[in-house]
Length: 308
Image (cartoon, rainbow, N blue to C red; front, side, top):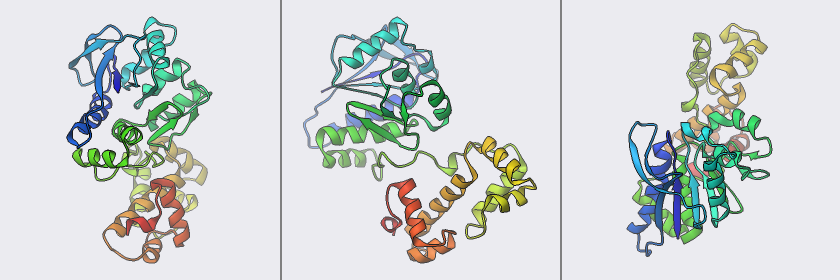
């Protein structure tokens, strides 16, 4: 099977190296190595990544079919347009391949070429608004780590390219080989595609001290009233002002941040044996085990019982 990665000036190195390593790690299993791995660009030669150094690439042959063609992401992705010779070459290469897809903001390249129209896809969470505005004909599943729609694969931000590669390996070679590759990569567990890419640890750092105080309060008062009204009082703002300011400075709504912080705290408690499901649900402010279970399914694609 021939797998080609397409790169361009100012590509994100980890978008390439992560999934490339995952496919290469199949050679460390008992399965005969099935892949021919190629790194291609429009003209070939040395291509500079965002880290400042360059990697050697082969010239893309649009007429040579790949079993899988993956367009990586990076700052340079937004410069590739369908009306250019490079864009036309990528489009032809994708259409001649059995499967194609993107990693991170590589989705912008595919969308600009009309290859994601009417399809489900994902990209980096920070780019969700720009992507949705620019390509309204794409069904954006921004909470997914990766998405498959027929023969098209897309992944979310950066490290999720490894999750995408593991899913593709499972599709090609089966779950047992995919798990062994994950072990070789020292990935504790392959994350499901439906698992959210958002984490409270990835929130934008708030500029205002009152919003930072609210976040600290949420973390230390999980079982308290964390409604917009109550948190607005702590921030010394009206509920309307607070909601707008919180979203503007963190990039997420109050309700979503509160729920996710509670879920992450509950997950840690369950994994460390702090208490049973009922106790953890109470300590983390869910009010009921059913509500906590639904929250876990939303963010982890697993029920809270799975983390005991």
